[in-house]
Length: 183
Image 1 (cartoon, rainbow, N blue to C red):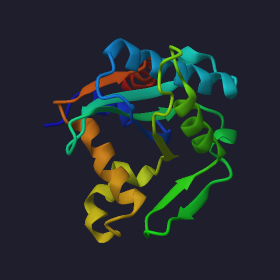
Image 2: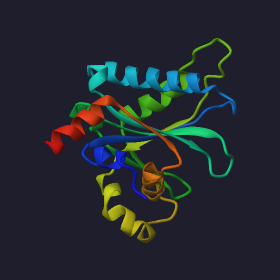
Image 3: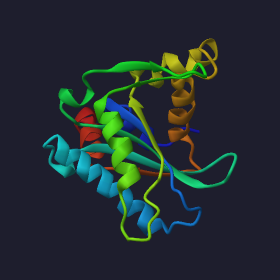
Image 4: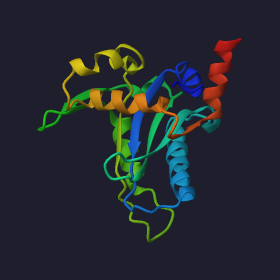
């Protein structure tokens, strides 16, 4: 069943898709959220975007295999310079990513964020440029792609934004964008 937030999300030109994990299994929810906001604020600052105008959606999920809590996010509202210099990187195992310097910077920043001196500061993040095909035809054609491709994994993960059993948080700026289309 489709949740109402999906309509707001479909109005946004997303630029990045990310997966954010935590080293420790038991990290308090407040700490997880603070880490997310620290990352999002840093990104907005890098590109001179007023933070309340940054477009983002954060989904909290329990891992299907390990049961560990992690985040998936969509980010938009950045200048075009944030998504330039895209590169397709093919890995030895046959998987690939489409990313750029912003993706690498976000991954590095997430790993270094720490609220306390005893924080392990080696969380893992995976960011890729958002592929607009994930909203439509990508879902229908996902079985036609290479099973280990990053696109196939992103199709699967972004499809779960519509699942009602995960915690979904939208920035106020996403709601504002959706309202402009509803007028």
